[in-house]
Amino acid sequence: MLFLSLRVPADDAAIQSHIQTLASRKSSERAVAFDALVATGDARLVPFFDAYRIGSIYLRDGVPFIGGDVITDNNLDQFVSLTHVLTGETMLNEQGEPELVSLLELENLSPNRKERIKVRSVSMLLNLSSPDNETRLNAAKKAGMAPLKTEAIPILSELAEGDASKKIRHTAAESLALLELGTSDDADLRMDAIRRLGELDSLRALSLLENMLEKDETLTPKQTAIVLTARKHIMTHQQKVKFFDNFKFGLSTGSIYILMALGLAIIYGLMGVINMAHGEMMMIGAYTTFVLQKVFGHGPETPQNHFFLVALPASFLVAALVGWVIERLVVRKLYHRPFESLLATVGVSFILIQVVRLIFGDNQSSNSPTWLVGGFEVANDMTLSFNRVFIFFLTMAAVTGVMVLMRYTTFGLKVRATMQHREMAASVGIHTRRMYSMTFMLGSGLAGLAGCALTTVSGITPDMGQNYIVDSFLIVVIGGVGELVGVVCSGLGMGIILQSLENSFFSPVWAKIIILTMVVAFIQFRPAGLFPPKGRLADV
Image (cartoon, rainbow, N blue to C red; front, side):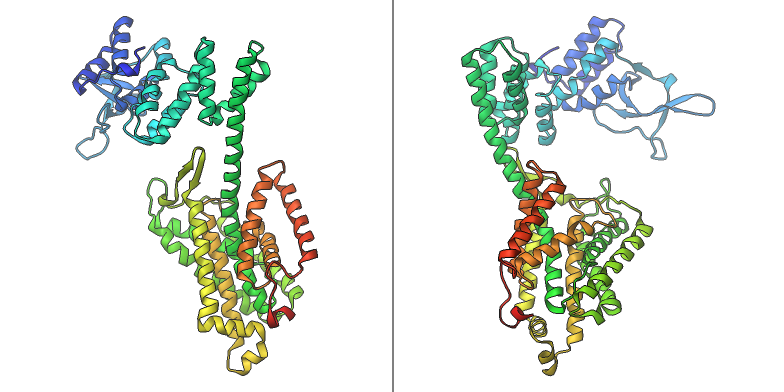
């Protein structure tokens, strides 16, 4: 097979001629035509070779087409729809629908076994020349994976030296070194490849190097030292990546905790109510987002990204409305009676879970808006996803909004007055029952907002709130009841510590046990939390 570095650009007429030659009965002529097609480096030929491998290329009056699924009518006649090899245009009939052409009018191009094996690596080689950066990057990464193809070495060298994308240059250099390590018989070249893999911080090479140290008995002391140095360099990089990932996932998990705990801190600090149905407010926000996604018709094939701009306020409002109903019917007579409110809201929690399960079933998937899909690379192997960055900034915006609301508005002043001394607040004309109701709605709405944010990183289930409610109460206790700064600090801290434990030597269950043990130990020394209440609140 010709190397892609010896690319011979061809016009459409020449490509079509080479494809026609593949119909020849002489294998030598077919081989020449095959290599000529590969040598063009034309990425448009990727669909052609994929279809050629499974025998779906047809000639109609000498013009090559990719055939669709074969359709058989009642008379057992067979038809296919045709797509032009180079333009990708589907042949249409007079009604503008795909034209079905009888197989009797077509000449089928079917490769033999040897040609079918040969064509497997062609798509990857052609994709290395794709004008699309993502396609080129994926092909460069695939070139360094088994089965290794030495045909990719020249084009990988070109990409490693001159591609416009830094990420593609790095990936091509890494795959080139992996190829040389896996295919070369020259010991010096293999050692040079190992040095480069160490300098490139190649995580893909780590298992290969460890396997060499464990099983390769032909290594000289000098070669062993080279492998050990490269492995040490890569393992140091691996620890940095692991720390970054723990911090990244911990930050987004902690952000969800903060949104949940904000509402709990406000509700418990003002009303003394332990609301065990708070997690279900999150679930309601998530299902509100799911319903709006269906209403707007948003999906991978038909993105309607503006649905999410409606879902954010809607999830807040719907959860707040449900919270208002719960407060009116259940919680209103249980103010400052934490144990009774705990039992009552546990019952409400079970009811909501079962109602939602009856309506929606057990599991639902969610499609994020396209602008939250993907991410950007901060450093080699360290990527920040857009959805997790969004969750963090949404949480910070919510925290800022609540702080402004509580400190600089009339509503916040009335809430703080009611929290500090209900009877005194009532005596100066504050409608304390209304304050309780509106505060409960605010806390429930924040949980609904958390549910909307959570749909961008996970699925939706009726009991999803149960995974967060206990941790959210712990965050309120650690931070200090009613203290928003404490909620932020304890929420981020718990998220990062939990992710670090889960990604080290502990299972999720043991990570939770360790977290609970740490919390118990912490409240022994600081029972009022990181930021204990001051003034009258300290006596509540």
